[in-house]
Length: 250
Image (cartoon, rainbow, N blue to C red):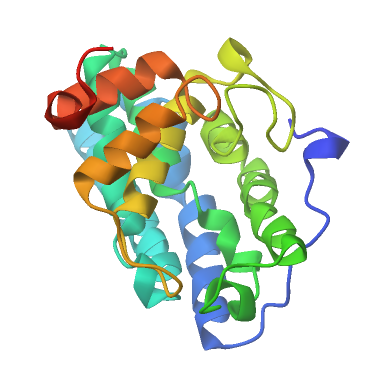
């Protein structure tokens, strides 16, 4: 459950058609029967073939729903189109290298897809700003993790997704929003943090051009042990093939 400290203090204004569309998709994806089926673990139960087939169809519908939701959120800003999909790909790549159990890897996928779901509560003026955010605006933007967690908390079967959504912006050195550090930060959140940062750095933003893959890899390496889990950074870069290109083995 979310503590009082972790609850959002700002939800923004849901004005505009994009916000309304996202809100409706949130409701559909997070409260639908498909979501309840897959995340309640019903797919693992034994039963007749038709029942299993129905549950598989429900699972596929749920995945499609949350992918549509992530796409709608990304579409609110042309500079983040495809962001959730790419973060999910990087996170799953890293999770697989970590030999995560199948169920944990499945939850990681949903966490990564929905890691920015709370941005439905952030005003367009901040999301679309063409310059770097002010300190106050950055504070409001950071609220998206709490907004997303509060949304997820409304549907009990989705509670396993909370760690990745709420804590993916925590810092490994403990200087993040909630002060969690090192192994106290859930593994899935640490994985998403690396994947999220890499995609953000290698994507264009209104106020800067995308970094090259090598430059983004260097930034991850430079911030290992402070912002990011150093072991995960090394494994991620080795997997990408960027580690040997610029960083060496130091």
